[in-house]
Length: 492
Image (tube, rainbow, N blue to C red; front, side):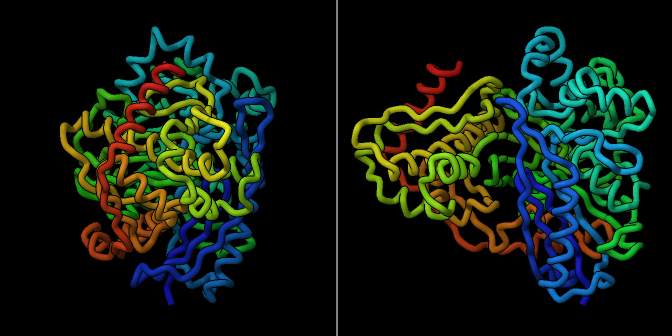
């Protein structure tokens, strides 16, 4: 049996998936979490050795679980948390911890640069000037970290997003590459010219020689070499940033198709084809993928916190031992007791469409009879109201109603969450059979890169699991109004 290995390196863990190369059906999946590092309030880091060890562990275990021999793997696809930036030596050793996309340490730098440079940055990259993206993180390392400074002095420092680090390690430190969807998240990449932008590199004091080569998303990135857990010679043929990979896994390859992934954060993408659409309503313009040297674009909305809010209730407040139990608890809360309660899940600032980098989370409208069930339901509502802001921004940009939304990610198994989203957004929510579409999309990208799959064949293989149809009520309209008023009052 031939198989595709997909490595999905996410914010809280790594998932290895085996997909049958002919049917594209799931053979096996293994996930392992790794520790989050919080050196100071607002700072988030990852130990790259922890990440690499979870790659070794998940790949080794998924082969056993799927009863697949390593030499039966035909190709490898990679998808990754995007803006997280890694500094590593030429021999593959980490220079320091990676700085994670959620990290806010460069907020002050962004504020200082905004008045002079934000418009130029937005025009060139499609992105606002925000700590979310990689450029200011690299700048911070170069300015503040002695280990990075020494490595640069010795010409022994390479930078890259997580995909670059994994490609480098998997290929025995021979291939320092990324692809366009990841490069477009760095604040350093000109998405119209499809190249690293020298003016932006100069602004952030970054030498281009430390950055990876940017390629198509579906191509030959290199081959496995010198690994104890995989044989030499397996080609890496597909790489996409996690949200672009999820769009691909949802077969969202045609202009106008959209998806929302509910993971640690929530990310909404709508495919705009070869047209570079610039949002007037707080969304990002990004590269969806690059094929045969041509860029295909998307408009994206980012909510930094989604599933992480449920984890907070689970871990910090100990509402329930398992995240999945929130659905049952939230269903015990009635509309009458929920009318004034809002959960604003802005633990790491607000992303689209408001872009308030120093915002913090809040729960408002509590009374003496508020309990765990009401706060749990408010948490789910807060996630869906954040995403509804993204959907409304897209509708304003496109002047068209979003009639259906394909959803994926671990949280979409929660039927209450999905129905709540349908109700607030007045949009049909469609859940596919495969909800791990990020890993699935990377496998499909690898198959396309290897030449064994076409876009048309991918569309035919996509299957729906369940649809959630919107229900109108004064409750939802009132809550949306209260949500907007509260955000304006507290943050804007």
